[in-house]
Image 1 (cartoon, helix red, strand yellow):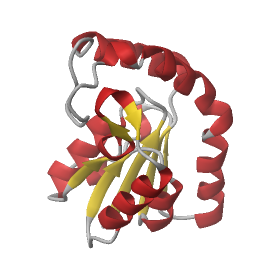
Image 2: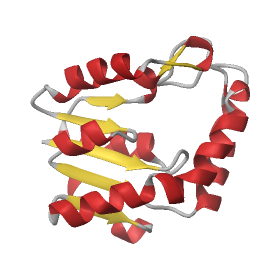
Image 3: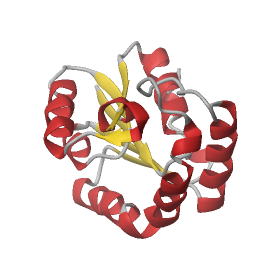
Length: 160
């Protein structure tokens, strides 16, 4: 089983991915560790592609993040399609806890305080930039796509 949990920053991707991985006995990976280097330096496109290729070549996984490459390799895509204000609120709560230190799943020396302006732009732009691409994948594939707009839509069969 290859599962991608995708959505806006602060949508709950990492939390849900870990819960599914634990319930299903699958390895769990976050793309933040691949995309970011210490001090929030972005990895090159070549580095990102190479590292993602290694992950998706495995037989089973749960990956959280936003990636067309992972989307194409996944058996199941779970899209956490939450309103912007929910993403902002959750990101704010998360950032507060890790304001001056790296949160789990990130390289060392990535305190949240350094990414706040960029994170704000990412969250604000997501509905117009990434959401249509993800929903296009829903239309393209037909099955294997779980569109989560509320807790009622959560894939409870994968959490058991």
